[in-house]
Image (cartoon, rainbow, N blue to C red; front, top):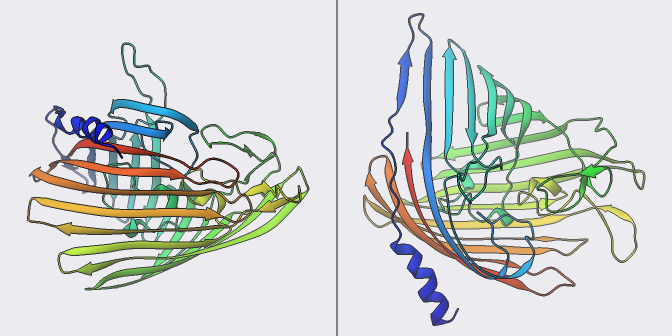
Length: 366
């Protein structure tokens, strides 16, 4: 990165953003039930410079090549949730504002988007939640939404899950993302198969915990159906992840292998692809990993440095992202920080492209 780019990127750091005063709401109801409201307001000021087109946050997809020099301010990650508890039963609903709509000419409106909606009864969860295959403890603390998504399992979907101690098992909503049927909006290419999925996805995980941290092993089984090419295949994937304590610091990691398809990178690769060498339909295989180290400088200052990457076997996609940040706690519920990093696309058969970014964020938790 030349000095001109560095100067432009660092100029964003001086931006300031005001947040409205908000508070946490918890209510004890007369019949012993409880209801609470939570979430956070997050403001992101982001500048991207390079060959990869601008996105509000990086995913594992390929946004396309283009001479990019783009600055934007967004509050779309802001989210609200509510939880109602009645004895052994609780219900949780959460939304953010990545649902599209609006414009930047006058109103900058954004439509709300459902994130979670589930019922929990003792050891059973039914509804939309993070996939049982997704290792939440391994996600790093980043300003860019979710960090190195290219190297992470990242998916929410309806499911029915049973938990017993460290063991979890679930049947989850199936979806074959391939080269058949109707367009899949926002997927970065490919379609949703017209062939109906006949069996649910099956996910299971086991977590080992101690004072040293935690490690999780997970497995995934799916039955993929595509009308075009008469594809009916079984797909398997596995991951190992963890959060290891190093004094007050921690190391977070995950390694994913197998035919994980749409579960990796929030749109990196389709489940079923056409082999460019043979012209045959095949189930894509992906290897993905991420690692992050978080350091506490003091009670009020902390930093995370991270890296994530993924490669596919058939189409030979390759995506990666690194970042480093510094975060300052201003009050118990308010922090501000700066993050710099890079997102790169090195797919076979196309030019290697990348973009640098710098992001200033403020987050106030309700």
